[in-house]
Length: 189
Image (cartoon, rainbow, N blue to C red; front, side, top):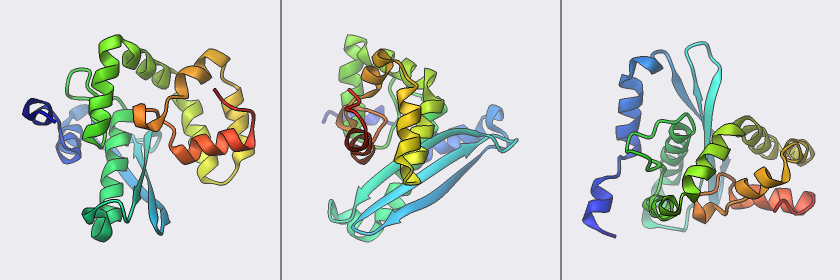
């Protein structure tokens, strides 16, 4: 990892401070919900505008045994990651075209993809279909996979293929969400 790369990375705390300092986000809130607390912690963050409308969501998962930090602070770490993803979902990306998500590895993957233009195309697809993505994620989190599959199947085949990016490559669906779609319906990609 180069020094230049990490120096250009804004932490979630820095992004939140900038987000809330912006007059455009006056009265907006970020709410967190602990979805699962066990060997793995699953957290959801929701950004609402001043009228209470949901403008973006972010999910994160941390495994308690994956690092020293997670052994004592998995919930806090997971919540921060979910906040970062929610901020990215509403387009708060202060570093020219570099997605400010929770991990340096995701940033590296995004930069690699951006060079080929794939990342820009993927982000546009996510933005264009975010309502469906949010529905799929919410229904899976609520254990209503049939409703998630119904929303997923409303997308055309090319859009499904575009969105079916692995989480390790910056994809918006977690491994568990992808498994739910694959296991309970026809293979999505």
